[in-house]
Image 1 (cartoon, rainbow, N blue to C red):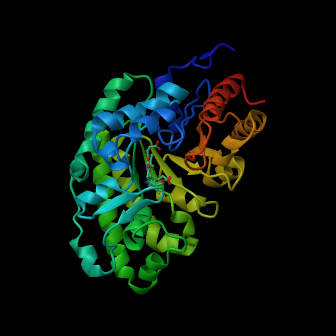
Image 2 (cartoon, rainbow, N blue to C red; image 1 turned 135 degrees about the vertical axis):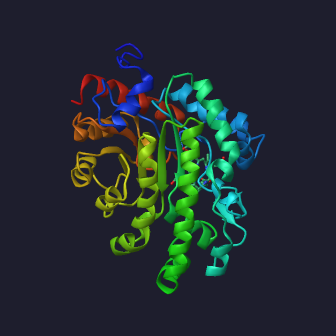
Length: 355
Ligand code: CP3
């Protein structure tokens, strides 16, 4: 098959169509963390600037947003930014420690700290992000749609309370169980800030949104219902009138899928700890689905990668509404050639029909 022959359909429409469960002539694919350290062209820019400088300089953020679109030929671009950025507008100081992720200078400990947090309007929490979106849309010139994003209230609350990444999330759970009203107040402020921020991204030109609840898998179903669902639901409800598809992402969520569906999202993202057909059956075929290749499969020989890609496509059974993706982000050590080979495989195999 000649390169690009899968594109019977305009590249710009396949991803957006599939989010709405419309039939497409091939399975669109994009990857979480598709812009990042596994790409030599990213590392070249990163050598000269810190990660936060890159996020805050729209020219640079736009450049690295486009790198995987050019190199991999993916069906969507994702804004280069971070889930932590809108917290600055709430009055929170943080930095990115090398190889460790975000670190908050003064973690939130009490109701008093939570009362001090502001709820910024619109794009006010991170204005440079809106500028990046405008530049990216211009440069994409219809080659692929642009996905905007934010963290979900629970994942951001856990960073604010723990002060960084955590293994057992003891401080977060301690607040949930000992000061539930304080936790609820924090979740309420986060959901308002995040919906304002996401609405501003759409006004600036984002054509789809993804809400990252990366650490929600550490919550029990009971606590999800009581402490997470109402606040995630509030965001998805506020985004409904915008008429852009919204993806709801979580990891380690095999036991929470029905609940994530109820909280909202046109597309539910699924990691690799559950077969995608089983996940879709549980979520319901009236929602689109995204996933679910294990990111470490990209370290395997091409033959094995192909087997696994084929398996996922077979399980998705050409039902309208499957976006191919990893179950979580591309790891920094991943060989870029394998990533590119995987994207090409998805396009070629799905255009032929999953055999
Ligand atoms: O997906 C993309 O290509 C878009 C860019 C993007 C980044 N972060 C860039 C980034 C997106 C969508 C995010 C979201 C994000 N940030 C999440 C949710 C997604 C997920 O992985 O669950 C989370 C939990 C964060 C918080 C965060 N930021 C962590 C844990 C880290 C460190 C990880 C590490 O491997 O060092 C970051 C830093 C970060 N965000 C990098 C990138 C490219 C690495 C920065 C560098 O170049 O040093």
